Length: 308
Image (cartoon, rainbow, N blue to C red):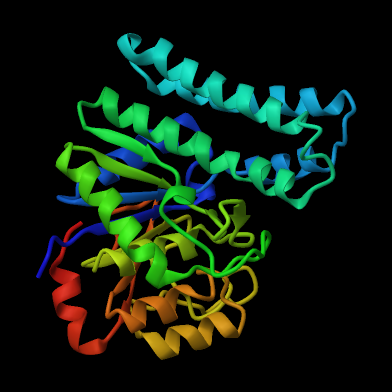
């Protein structure tokens, strides 16, 4: 058996402040062989969608300056003095790219302009996570999912991953980063088409990215760090007696998701089940609580014994 990786996905609701990035990095440091998938900071994807709809007016630069401030503020709070300037410069470089794309007349009114713009939330998050880990004396590198995940066709807004094509690219990239002593920080949410254009996997699809990465790496476990204590029997906003499901099989979990539990992207469980990878849903705010394990019941004991 080859190297086993722990694939960790951090959702946008868990990355809403500089303090959240610090907490996420502490969680990452608890694993022996982590691979990290990040979403955009909470609210940033919606701001980018609004940017896509802003046309050529002055609101374009206003929106970009708002997005820049969010990320520069987060970076300034979590980086140490010796890394602050290069880390802030990397954020500014991404902002300059975003400005160029927003004003590129060759892309005007094209779906490709929108998908490229929407991908920047995850790009910013990956850079911030990388620099915080570097400041804590970990090796880390941001990896663009468009370099390692390829769609089946040219659908730009609801892409489906060609898992067979992507598997070798993912494995090679992660292996190279690990050989260099780096924790790979992979952007969720987007990929590339066979012709090389940026495509979006759909809203809330960074979970899908994580499942593809984990299945390609023969991951020992796929852990989703969320702002909930686990998969629950009902929505606590409406159901008083709901409880956290500590262990549940793949098929039963799919049933909950089909019936409205929106805790995971719909494709996550089928991909993980096909590859025999157990799924954990853990509470980002309370990382020592058990959360939920989804998988084959015969393997629950082994999965429970793994840390953290």
